[in-house]
Image (tube, rainbow, N blue to C red; front, side, top):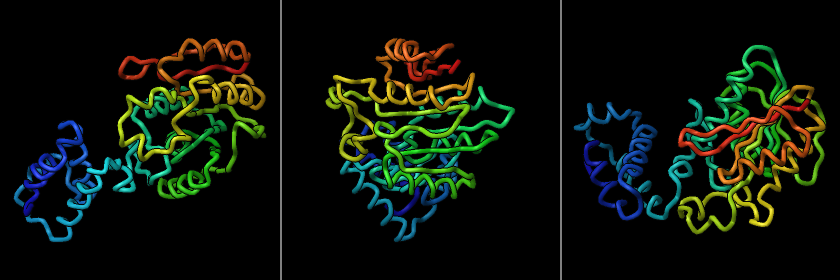
Length: 280
């Protein structure tokens, strides 16, 4: 590996046994952009550029870690979300593209007047920070993890927004305050679904941010909904990202708790993925 044009063959030769080719190419271009500052077209235009020894070492290290199924977001300590850059690391849930769709829905619904927002289970802070970059108002976020609070604070500074962060266990603590909009992407993957998940998720990402027991799949939705109903202002909205298999059950739960004007929305892949409900 001497030139930029050698990087792709090197990745394919070393990693095709671990990743599908399209995913591998995407990972490679992300790595090139991060370390060399080259876009896909730039990679082609500068294909004959000679790599420095330290650059070669960087890509060798990336490949070594990818062979251990470490997510590229952890290797680079960075990920992109809704056009913004976020620091991340092992122990912090990696933001997903479908969550961008949830953020986009909230932003489109809440343009104009200033409102107060709360993100429950903020993780890297990707949801609340993206909202703060695109909406007017006050922005609060909570998480059970001290690491998440630290990373979210770092990401808020990185993206130049003000977020009020607090360590809170939503299952054990009451919410205090008033909000116009509450959003949460709580754990919703059933433990029985582990067997069909990729190793780079299972071996690296935090279980507590992903999984719920099969016997109580709506545990977080019930707790968050009940507590949100007491702190949402009149005509305020609760937004959730959900397990695609529990759309109707989540609607029923929200109705029983007392929410109205409930809307279930599919993601770009046609799966039930997000829901909103109004506090009357």
